[in-house]
Image 1: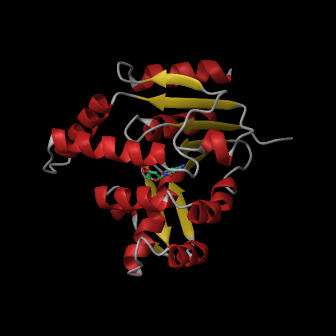
Image 2: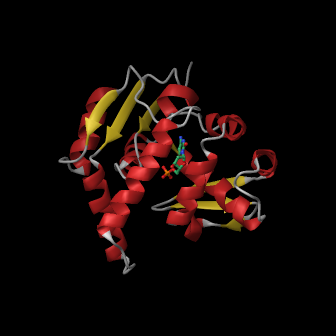
Length: 218
Ligand code: DC
C-alpha cells in the first residue's frame, strides 16, 4: 500500500508552515518542512566557512551532515548533534538557503533525505517542489500563495511582535527578490503542479485554508 502524501507548495510567507503543521496534527501524519533542510545546510556552510559558490564543497557538506527533527509546537532541528533552532528562521539563513537551492547538484543530494520522511500513516510535505519533484505521485496537492504585500505585512507583524526592528518596504522587496530567485531558477523552480488545488490566502484565515484542504482530502 502506498503511503499517502499531502503536498503544500508556495512562496515564502504564504502560511504553508502553520497550515501544514496544523494539518499534520489533525490527520496524525508526519510533517516535512523541506525549507528547513535547505536552511540547515545553509547553517552548516556558515559553520564550516564554505563559500556559497563552491558547489563541490557544498555537496560534500550536504552528504556528510546529519539532521534530527523534533516537531513540537515549534520545529526543532539538530545539525550533527547541535541544536540550530534559533538560527533557522534568520533572514540571512533564508537568503543562503535560496541561493544554494538553485544548484541542481545540491537538490539531488537532498532529494532522498526528503523522501525518507514518507512513513506510515502519512505525510504532510511543505516546500516549493513537493508536488512537482519530490512526491510527484502524491494524491493530494495544494499550491498556497498570497500577494507579496500581504506576505510582507504578516512577516512585519511577526517581527514587531518579537520586538525585532523591521521595515515593511524592505521586507516586501526581500520577499519579491526571493520569489524571483525561487521561480526563475532552472532546477525545480517554484511552480504549481498541474494537478494541484490553487488557494490564495490573502483574504483567508488559517482556519478557512485548513477547511478547504480537508475538503479536498475527504
Ligand atoms: O520555505 P523556506 O523559506 O524555509 O525555504 C528557504 C529556501 O529554501 C527557499 O527560499 C528556497 C529553498 N527551498 C527550495 O528550494 N525547495 C523547497 N522544497 C523548500 C525550500
